[in-house]
Image: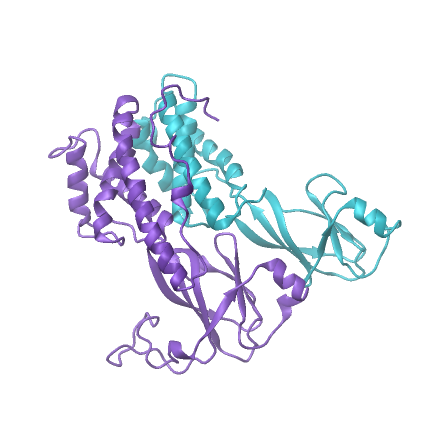
Length: 199
Length: 262
């Protein structure tokens, strides 16, 4: 488990501060902003995978994907797996696919926008849609946590340090930022090896 | 080496022996722990074994609820008969029954569970998430902590998984704590810590410390090769990262003209 409060606290000496109030060229809030931005980069890897459920109502085919969604791995309706399809495939399969009702067998992600999943066919009974999604944690303050092994937190440490030392100003240290970037690359290679990549 | 010895030697290497000024003991401890975590991640040398109780009708489990130090699964076996209370070596109850469980069925009574992916089970049966029977035949992981089993144990059955897994080593806290990695690699933690502490200063301090990071990575590569051979012989389900194939030239070389930080 990763707790971001201790990560930022342990990072302070590398920014020449003993406490958050001693920071000269940054604010503590900025450091958490750097961490939150990095969370979206971490979402490229299959580390944070969650099972989330959406209530399906009869007659409704379109549902919004979870907030902070990065990629959809798997979807099942009432514990029966559905196949992924594209709009072009549905067009070839069934010319009346937008209004066809019956047993749901497929799901489509490219009907409307990037954050909606549409079922084919339109379900005729309520149920539960279970999604396996790659997501990323929200990091707003010291109480933020993420469910991953603690070495993943070290990646965040270097990401925050890189961002801090890249910021224009007297605290800028390009050599340290570059070295942090290379350490992050090593961690990214490890993440891809052990947990895969979403892209 | 104990944490006290590691700290003392690290401070001596950065000319801070005696009364540290630039680097506190807490900073050194954090750097040593970070090196320990990275070493374990590179080599998967820390192994533990524990059991995961399976609930009837449940296919998905969140592993951090059972193993706080979870990293990767190495081998999974299912035991479908659990008898009596867990007893210790001298018939006293222990809170940790994983190792000294004499009353329960021994490992000889377990069945190996092979890994599978969600899509493989989908191809077999789209309704695999509702299959219930004994014993569990396949397991898989999604992300850092989700684990699924197929088929699920039937509601009336008692079953559990014996899992051998790669673990995150225990953090060094007290001066007497000893790193869980093999002792001949303890000094490599000092090398990592020295380079990490140099990030505070940057410039020439960092450049001088980079060869020690290279030494740390070379040691990790050596042990990872040993662990990989052992894991293959044991037919484990995971192997360490191929550090030999990773281009670390930019990591261990000072950036004369740093590229634009992304």
